[in-house]
Amino acid sequence: MAENVAHSAGHAEQHWYAAYTCAQHEKRVAEQLAKREVEHFLPLYSSVRRWKDRRARLTLPLFPGYIFVRLALQDRLCVLQVPGVVRLIGFGGLPTELSNEEVEVLRSGLADKLHVEPHPFLTVGRRVRIICGPLAGFEGFLQRKKNNFRFVVSIELIRSAFAVDVDAGDVQPLQESKKNVKFKA
Image (cartoon, rainbow, N blue to C red):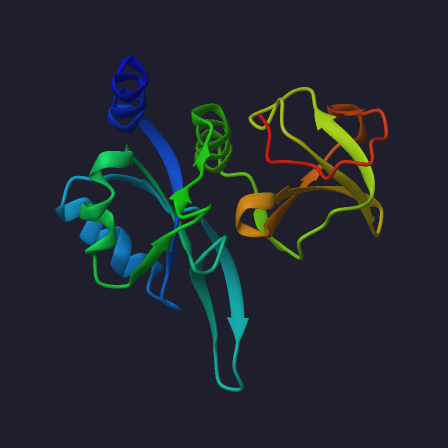
């Protein structure tokens, strides 16, 4: 009986979850979540697109097809009823939570106007940790791009990644491990 009480209390605690959306519906889903007063986070980045006759600066989702929502598991129906939401990402029929710290560090990094962009999902490479700046604590992969270093964070839960340019002095090598890097803060 005490186990059931503890289990239901876990359902009342708010956590961040990744919601999978229909293609190109992320911004509409964010609008609907705002109307329903559901805390959400849609990471965006800026990109210049060129056509024959013009150029345009677009604001696009950093993780196409995903939006992060913060809610108690018992309240997940209010998210699943939003037009454009397909499901909450998880395993074994239950949504898998992200840590509050992970999402908050990502939010603060994007609020500081870091130049981030999507990157192919990585599971191998030189593992490092950011030691200073708005993304301090994140673990990921270090890559060289021309004369610059890029830090790539792979988010295992949604099999997506993002990259940001960093200075070599802002990262610290991690010991090599055979385990895949998780989204850590």
